[in-house]
Length: 243
Image 1 (cartoon, one colour):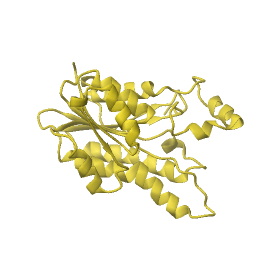
Image 2 (cartoon, helix red, strand yellow):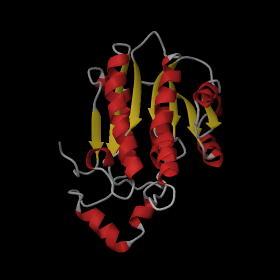
Image 3 (cartoon, one colour):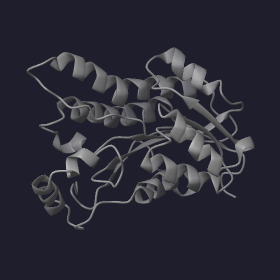
Image 4 (spheres, helix red, strand yellow):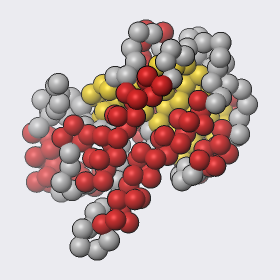
């Protein structure tokens, strides 16, 4: 199995994409450290897997110390760090825009950096390792309704490119930029019928993506097939962005 005994650290593991990815890599022999603020979701996912090869840590990763504590939940060097955790809080510029901005950047960018730094101190020195960070289609287009989210996801793309240089040649750092995926985070965006129809019209493939379609791209970026790919952000959006 290609990931036999290799440790994957996955944040946002209890989400739609996270669950699909963990099932995929665990089925290929990986050991997993699953991190999410949803403790019940983590335990439900662990129940599907080999408990002796799976550790969980419930946290929103709001500080470097929490990132270090999360990594202490398991032993051994890290082969892959996959960042899927994030939030999409509503914005109201008339109320307290700075509070929402700070929260959005903390949940979608700052913790990604903090965990990358923590993981970099625990990497497997015997092989080239992987980091895959999750951006969004909004990093290329912006978002009028979620300004902080668009800015944070643009920051993730910049982080991918910078860390790819910082950690080379021992670590391949890449990103994925999902579009409209059938997962809990963007569900409210599709609740309104008129808005849903407008969003669907901008997707050339005329459907939302399934979480496993994002997970499969992350799997590729963690595999030997991507050995000469680093510093890239791959769109997984059904063709919304094609540059």
